[in-house]
Image (cartoon, rainbow, N blue to C red; front, side, top):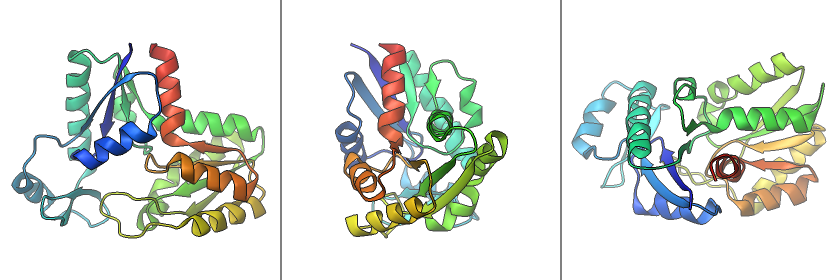
Length: 233
């Protein structure tokens, strides 16, 4: 059976591993780990000194949160991806929808953002519109940039709305009614497809959004996993 490494951009824990194993429904053996696995709380605290609050969140053993830079996370992702491939994984799936262009050059490493962009653009068609659901309100302005760039390249309208799943370092979690409200708002803007742009969105979330909007909905974790499974089986 195919073995797929699943790599999250923070330190893994049993709850996160269980979440991935539950919501990534593939006929493959999964090896789940995190970019900062092996780092102690003291090491993470030291790396967080002077870092902006909206950077990458790490939850410490006492439940508090610190933030580290993209550069530190990238180094961890590269190191762990190399280890997973060396240890026998057929491929490594990055469990984060943000652009990690530096990882695209690594053979056997699959980043979701290009899969989501290309699939959404194909479903939307020429001069169509894409709705993007974003998980962190404070980071939306930055995280929507690659979608806006896609819109410029492909002649597509991009409409972004905040919808909060359970993500590290964030306290807000939307109810089904709130997801449905966001879905209807995007439908009113006449989008052709809705992208759930975070690996923390579940199949339940996708079903709620699809029913409320009446639109095709792409869930990042499952779509990326299906591509990886198909390519490497």
